Length: 349
Ligand SMILES: Cc1c2[nH]c(c1CCC(=O)O)Cc1[nH]c(c(CCC(=O)O)c1C)Cc1[nH]c(c(CCC(=O)O)c1C)Cc1[nH]c(c(C)c1CCC(=O)O)C2
Image (cartoon, rainbow, N blue to C red; front, side):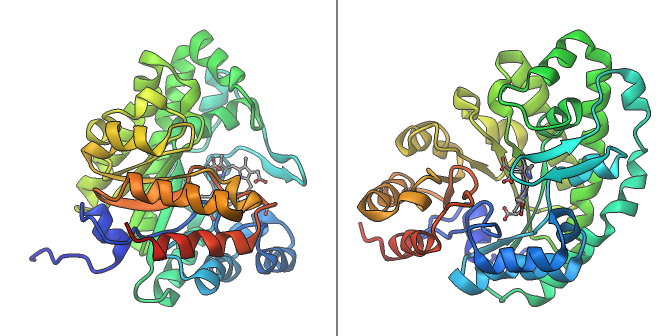
């Protein structure tokens, strides 16, 4: 089989091509800032029922593609489905966020389900991917995803989102064997989960390490970089050529060399770094994604236009996928999203 050059813009950027206009999608593009999302979520009943309903999950994935013509669609699901598939209890408290059963020792890790049991819970997600690969426009790239082991572990240990991930750091330091066993279990589950998404039709996968920023020095290497490297190495062995985006959010200096060290084809940048810093220290190694502050989706105006142009300008010398630095928030204005897209697509140097 001879490799053919990709034609979809996102795949071209991921293959290392510098495009005259960067392809664009945004994190949480299917979400509460869109009235059509809220309507479909109400129809599903609640957030988790939406995640596990393939027809409706595919519908909300397609909504921002219809409205804006983004270059990529991201599978509608959540990083916390993996803990649930491993046996954790999971529910969402409206206005507050996720809640899970907690875990902090070896007995807790041993009580989890084996990795090969995850598909019993996650098979509806694979069905969503199959529907999307049939229904997406020919030019739109389908992105699958999972949480990175450290970020997923922080929720499984604390049972909720935490500002500083203190319970996970306490287990990492106080019960290192159990903590390593947990990271290994999540890593193995993530490989199987992403591999099934790829088999079902995901053309790219993204690994979200939202809390990577609280790991410093050796701990960052061991628990953010190493698990990402393991997952990427195994996925590329099973699915040669599958492009992978890594997002070690707020890694700061940890961004430097992250793509090379893990084998990721693209490193997603958050907006705690300037685009110029990202260009100098990360973009030199290859494709980057990012990094407009999502607050501009709330505030809009000329500041949005200026900041959008600054991101495009900083990264126009190499392969770039335009995105926000983190997900769009529920108070984002759909008009501001349209203005951002128009600014990216009309930018002339
Ligand atoms: C940490 C994390 C989670 N989930 C995710 C992360 C990593 C990225 C990040 O840092 O934001 C990833 C995620 N969550 C969701 C997607 C779908 C694809 C997309 O459009 O980006 C993706 C890629 C849907 C979602 N996941 C969630 C929503 C909102 C739920 C709702 O409709 O009420 C959506 C659209 C809920 C969720 N899910 C999670 C939290 C903390 C929350 C509550 C916060 C909130 O309410 O925004 C865990």
